[in-house]
Image (cartoon, rainbow, N blue to C red; front, top):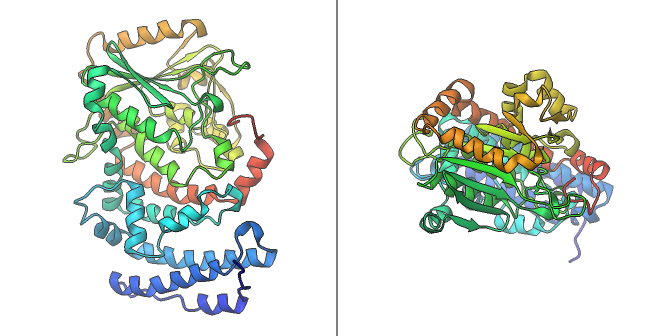
Length: 453
């Protein structure tokens, strides 16, 4: 379809019609919907991002920026009221993807609609307009509100419906294979093995659902007391069938544009926070009651990026000699989940900043590594070391485990502190995910065909 050239004067005239806020949601919604619709029409009048001239690229940026400024102003005034409307005054729990879907329907133009997301879904990351940034800004403002944000955190800590549907089957069989994750009951432990061998067990859009369902089932299992996380074996000749814990986010899929923005928040508000806080109940605050177990991470080879972040959410980390940890988020151009919140508690502020901002590598068996890792074992003794760890943690019962976990969180990371952090994270990660700097960093540091690193 041939597209006409959008004139700069059209953009200027439209930007000048940005509505003022009356303070009344219904009035402001009506006024802003027309403004946002005109922005979408102007953007559609330009070629796709990959085909734009420098002038057209600047025009697109001007349209997106003006519309986003209007959205932010609207959200700062009305985010809590919008959340209450979408959740029937917080009487319904909605996961964040469903919350965004309903927001797109009830408030056209506030966040991208399904058809707009689909139109960009198959484009490489460099060719996307970053419409999903508006999802980040919406969720950041929701999380910034104490009542709405706490309710959303609570919703994401509830067991998933698809996990509840498989609970009875796992209770009977004691084993399930979800493809990217294998879950098996071994004595008093549920063992989750992360498997994405082509990409060194990296995480992406193909692994996330399986991981959260497996975490839910492990926590729900009535026949076990602790849970173990471990990476699967890598059949590539370079690894000779050895295990690795994981290589973080799958940069191959990120470059290809396959990882949506909501992936980050779904991951961290979902299964990673469930490792740290357990499963919530619908009728009690997550800080008062829930379903919790001790989590053990068994680190073979390395824990890079997101897999290093996991270690900051578990109760005990066992690492093989020679294993190492890194958080190369600056190199990738993103924020490393909740690591900025949690890592300083383990290693102090200076080392945490060096790890995040300067890519400091931490050897698990080093003095610094011992601040994160509880025990070190020879690589060929990891299986036996895991068994000893489970026996030690369950030998005298784990009746007080949930109570002690809650007590640690009360002093270190209450839900309100986490909520406020995730508000900042939602906003900053949205901008990072679509930043030109991310593309430059990946072009410089990432090599196609070499997995996630």
